[in-house]
Structure formats: C-alpha cells, structure tokens
Image (cartoon, rainbow over all chains, first blue to last red):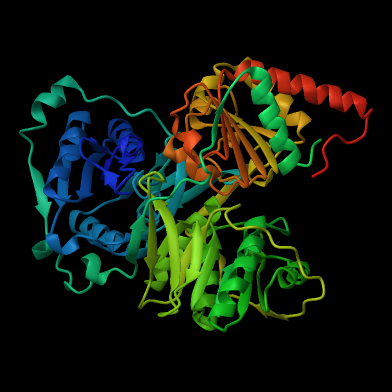
Length: 260
Length: 337
C-alpha cells in the first residue's frame, strides 16, 4: 500500500505579531513549522506503515526552504519525500494548489492520501477535500480514527453535533483532525539519516501545467487588500479600589443591560 | 441571482442559513438581483415558508429519499445540479463543518474559487464584485478577496457572524421542487452509523451576556464564581483557549478564532490577556468590559471599559450586590433584556 501525506510548512501563527504602527505582520524571527494537523496525518500514515506494511511518501509545495519539513518527516520515519517548487506556482489559491497537488499525486502514485484537516496560516480546510474532487476519488474530512482491511477503509469522524462512522474504498483522501493521535517525536536513528536521504523535486517541467492556469495568474480568487483590525473599544482603562471598580461596572450594567 | 444554501437537519433549519439570507437581501439590493434559498433533504416542504420570511424570493426544495441524512457525495451532486441549472452569481454557504466540507467539494467541481469563513461581505461599488473579507494568520491579518472571472463567487460564513434579522411574516415568494438525478451508486462513501453528541445546553454564539474567563482565573473553582455572576446577569459563562486547555471549562464554550464567534450585548472578560485569536471572536460584541491585573494587556486596548485589578474581590462584590437585588425583587425576573 502506498500512502501519500500532503504537508505544509507554515509560520507558527501563535507567534506572529502585528506591528501596531505600520499595521503589517511581523514575521521576522517567527519560526516555520510543519502544520500541526499534517503531522497528525503523517503519524496516522506511519502507524499504517507499521501495521499494514505501507510505504509513506510526504509531499509538500512551497519555496525551497520548505524542505525542512520533509527532513523532519524522514526523521519521523517517512520513506520518500517530494518538494513541489516552481516560481510559476507562487500565489496559488486553494483551487489551484489542490490541482497541482492532485497532479503530483498522480505522478507519484497512491492508494491512500492523508492530509491535515486544515493549515493554521489559512484555516480554510479546503485543499485536502479539493484534491479528492480533482482526482475523482472519495474523501472523508475531519477524521479521528482510521481502520483498514483490504481495500475497505472505515473512518470515524466528528461533524457538527454528530459522530459518524463512514466506510469507503481506496483510493481515497482522508483529512485528519488533531484528535486522531499524538504525533511521535523524531527518532534518533532516522535523525542521523534524514540529511542524507534524497528529496525529489517536482517543478513545472515535470507536472507540465499551462502557465496561465497556475500560480497567482491561474487562481480564481485574488487578494484585493490586506489590513489589520483596529481596536474595537476606546481602550478606556480604570484603576481604583474594589468598591470603585464595582461601581464602574454597575454603571455599565445599567447602561447596557438596563439593570438598575 | 444570489443563492444561499440553507442546511437543515431533521427538518430543522440551521440558524446560519437564515442569517445568510438576511445578508443576501442586502447584497442583492446593491446589484439589483433576487435571492434564492436552496435546501436539501426529504419531506422538507414545510421549510419553504420560513425561508421566504427570512428573505428568499425563491426557494428550491431539493428532495429525494436518499437525501434524508447528509452524505457528502449525494449532497455535492444534488447541489451541483441546482447550481448548474440556476447559475447564481454568488453562492453563500454556512460554515458549519458540513458546509466547510460541502463548499470545497462543490467549488472544485465547479472550478471556481471559495473564500472560507468570511467575516464581512460587501459589493464593490465599481466592479460590482463580491468583496469577501476573512481573517488569516490566526486572525492576525484580515484579507479582502475577490473572484473576478469565475462563477459563482463562493463564500462560507460562520454562524453568528451576521445578525439574524427578524422574519417578515407577510413576505411571499416562489417555491419550486427540484428532483436531482442521484442514485445510491453515486455514493462512494457510506454512513454506516452515526450518533448525536450530547448537545451543549447553551450556544454561546447566541448569548446576550457572556462572562468569560482566561488563564488569570486560575482554577475550575474560579469558573464557578464566573458562572454565578453570569447566572445573575441572565447570561452564560465562556472561556479562552487557555482556560479550555487547562480543563477549567468545556471546549464548546471556547471563544475565539478556533472556538466560537460571539456577539453579545455585554462581554465581560475576566483574567483574559487578549491574544489576537481571542479578540477575533469578540469583535462583534456591543460592549466589552475587561478585568485584568495587567493594565498593558492587549484586551485593555479593545475593551470599552478596562478595570485594572484583582478579579476575585471585584467579581465577589458584584455577585453580592446582584444577589441582594435578586432577593429584593422577590422572585421576579431579575434581568430584563
């Protein structure tokens, strides 16, 4: 069984700050990490590698520095890694990104595709689902558990107020939620080897898209503008005794809630 | 035409679809077009009236035996057929988890763009394009996105982002039935079993008063105090991500980017420093009171009133005063909202 894990390198958004004067993102010094739920997907793949003798291929798309997460995947136990990188692909939205990833999957070959539910930089949860649609194969989103026998696969997932048990056949795509497992740490043995393993590069000379159909140019959605939110309130701050503080709050209660 | 997908479950409409109908009516005025509501299921004729009252000019009822419970394959195929037939300019979908699964499947099938979790929708005066604004980088940045050349322009919106408008009981509209050409074989996934999770007793995204606690509350017992205050104010208790991670409060009461967007009349933030992810969830509140030891905490900059101090004596004193008042009114409803 051949498993592809799609993973993305993302800035650790919990560390991204906004420059209060310029209103721009401060990304300097913010570390890049493997998107957390993609790591859950990789962990699920590695468990299937052990139980079902699968091979695990990790694929990412991004600038050359994104190879860091592929090295990390090797150190966790992945067998093979591909970096999709081409200046033509820069600025791709979710539709075009998923199209490119789908073609990479066809190039590499797969029985099962796993990816994280969503990435923390965009939070769209679209790419995994759209990959399946481009490949014409089934998809189950938000999985919390996977079990496989032969070509049948049973997935447990949580959707709104329901827990569902879904069965489908491979090949298929499953997007993995953080509740599925706890990703392993890199292991020392693989850590030594991870820098000597080959990372294969896929660019447009391999994937062969019409260049007007990819990247920023080919993407249906365009970013018109970006901005940071201004503060909501006036930022009126009061410091006084407990009595005075309670008095202030009581004034608000009567004004806003009509409690006298 | 602007189309709104209105999710139903057990013949109950999800609130977010009705919120989106209200927004669609506003947008439709600006581009001089009509609003169509689409709902999918079995034996759902009775929902049409409600959809019209909330703003639909036309209702498309997509009904079939196989559509009684949600199956992503069958729903996608059915909705895809309706979109191909009706050719909407704009398609809005509630960003429930169901909508966040259905949306991308449909968008990829239609080869169009989809903007997830929009917090603002407007029509551009010049181009008449839909301006879709959404948070990115964990709420640190807002991006306004357009979809100039592909149709429909698709967006999902989380529940509670737009206000639920009052229904107009005398509104009339057209109701049509659509029978999709789906067969059981179209379902490549099978829902073998499902069960409802225990329903939350209250949906914080609809609460009018919220007393919310963060790391500074310090313990589960601290949250008992906040709950008491919330009860006296006729409100509900909620928490930041830190409070949830510490196990002081349930996950479904989490406010913020990864929790829920709330829009109460009054939001009281107790011991919450105000990480940007949290602020993203409270921006729609009418009035924010923050109680925090640190005068420089980010929450103080967005609060309408920031109280610097130890939360415990302040909250205790508030509880004491409000309890007295409740007793004085002798059983009458304490809070009139």
